[in-house]
Amino acid sequence: AQKVTQAQTEISVVEKEDVTLDCVYETRDTTYYLFWYKQPPSGELVFLIRRNSFDEQNEISGRYSWNFQKSTSSFNFTITASQVVDSAVYFCALSVFSGNTPLVFGKGTRLSVIA
Amino acid sequence: DTGVSQDPRHKITKRGQNVTFRCDPISEHNRLYWYRQTLGQGPEFLTYFQNEAQLEKSRLLSDRFSAERPKGSFSTLEIQRTEQGDSAMYLCASSLVTGIAVNEQFFGPGTRLTVL
Image (cartoon, rainbow over the protein chains, first blue to last red):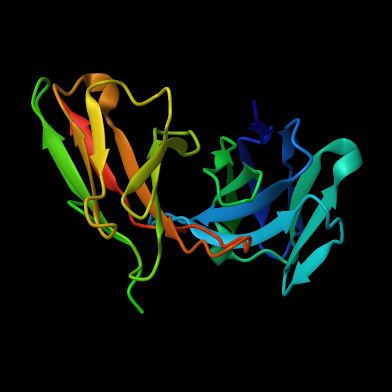
């Protein structure tokens, strides 16, 4: 069975601080995909990134960066110089096999960025 | 570019009533997924379709739940004899699967169900 754990339920930071959201996953499959989604107050899930199990390169996209470490089964997400618009619930998710199978989500981390 | 749409956005019903939700995926997407999200939790998978074929149903999907995607386009999710525990946000997502390419799932705004 697959499992995704986001141990941080809520995080509050002051604007311009850096913040890291943790994600730990469990699967016995050797081929899998990891995702991050953002759920703003409006409620609609927004895709942020996809990573496959064979690609451990870190990725940076603007103020967002992701650190994938298979040795610790972690896929952490860092926001640099946080902004109020980053306030949302962030979900880490896992999909095994082809990556097009149903997603297994963590419980999410609610991020509040205070001006 | 039209995203995933869901109807209705909100539904309030009395325990024991039947409800039906509709999802219209992005037009060229062949995969359609249903998830359920309760307060403070991540979405949980219910069922998914490849075109009109239902590929998998979660153990969460009791006999009171049924989903269809009759022509491989829109999908409906019906809950019969609703219970208070069915109160949740029901999310629909779609994706385009071609060969081995992995594509993200695009989510709709959800239907919030409240069972009184």
